[in-house]
Image (cartoon, rainbow, N blue to C red; front, side, top):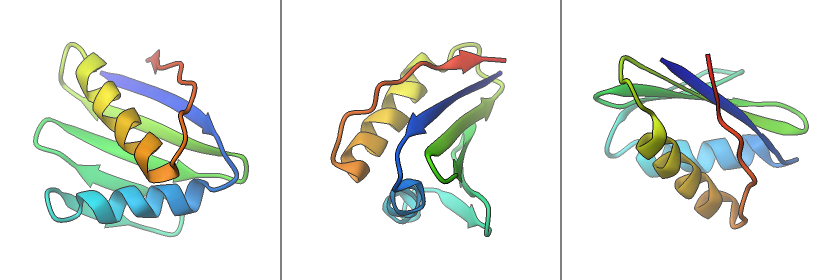
Length: 91
């Protein structure tokens, strides 16, 4: 299952970096010029910073990402010090 959302922000790179640094002690993380990946036991969270958005994608074999979506957005809200309006899409 894949779920994704785009968060409106001009600070996408900074927010992604903060979340990566926050979770790197708990999970394996990978970072390239264009994206960051957080490798969790049951899912991979992919953060793609763009000019006006932070694209967030969750990939896993789970039947339901609802709980994980909540954990990810809660952490992103804390890293950004703001509350994002989120509409997750499943593909």
